[in-house]
Length: 58
Image (tube, rainbow, N blue to C red; front, side):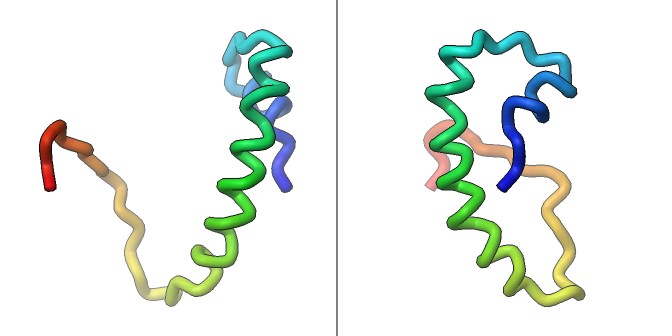
């Protein structure tokens, strides 16, 4: 698992420690779910470099 607190600090995010303690378990859960899915992607699949979540889009 990634050290989310170090990542936040390294990116200059000034997130208070109590907030980080609340956020880290959710990030760990997302990492655990998405890491195996990402590993199954074929090497020739291009990543989406732009994602636009439009309000009201179906």
